[in-house]
Image (tube, rainbow, N blue to C red; front, side):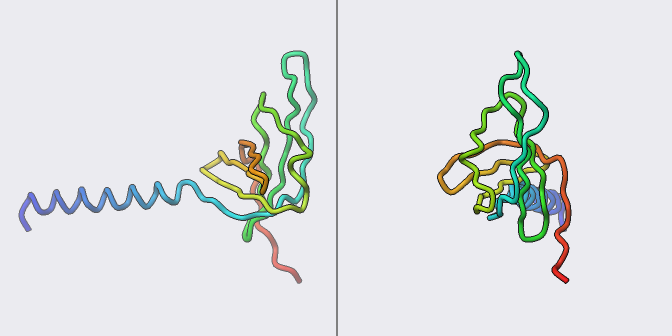
Length: 116
């Protein structure tokens, strides 16, 4: 192999790996909203309540905390309903069937145990 061919092959391989990781970076799954709980309390500066959304996917249970300062209407997220869960590292987004969404950060991940 010539030097030009080797460097071209390396560039091609690196591009393929980067595009594969970019696709895998944002994982979208259909999940179930298991629970919705308030976190902390509001103050004069922080007027919006934070929430923990507990989400069950096929393999894991995620606790996703709404971003500080963001507004969420808890009546729009019905416990037990199906949601779209988009995960990108520790950041994620939950979207219900009506199209309402909330951005949140993953604070805990637990493996779902198989039924006994």
